[in-house]
Image 1 (spheres, one colour):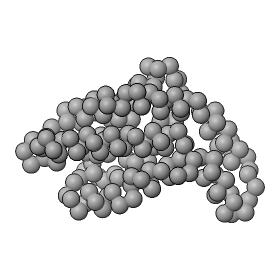
Image 2 (cartoon, helix red, strand yellow; image 1 turned 180 degrees about the vertical axis):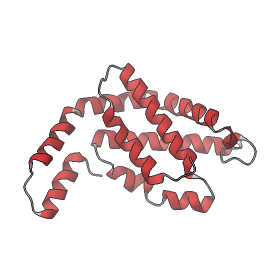
Image 3 (cartoon, helix red, strand yellow; image 1 turned 135 degrees about the vertical axis):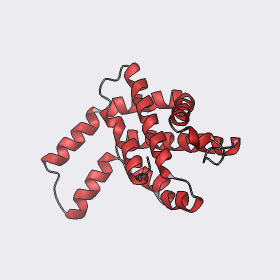
Image 4 (cartoon, helix red, strand yellow; image 1 turned 60 degrees about the vertical axis):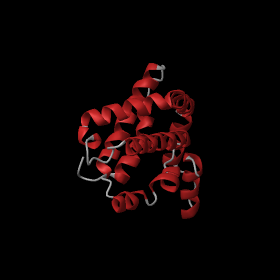
Length: 169
């Protein structure tokens, strides 16, 4: 797993360039948000079960067909699997949040996930919506914890949404 610093250095090293003004600005931005990233991860860690539960309730309120007979979250086993997956996405989003890099998401979450969902007949649209709901809840909670700038929270959630996205939201 890489972080923002090692990814940036790796990219400049591959091209044989010195760190330029853009690189320095990127590093400065990463370090300026470092404490807030760690604090946000702490908020997620302390509230993970509640975040997942609340996101699940919002998702199933918006898309009740998921929990009706024939829906992808119908039956207790499927419902629990959905919440388990949401917890999984939240945990890895917190890792990427601290790292300031989405590399861990590619390695541990996204690689092969779309193909798995397609082979199982699971539409990714509701998954994407669930990820976005979790992002909204996390931002609300970290703002309530006194972290003022929350834009860095968008990166991992939006990245997963983009990579899993489809048009059937």
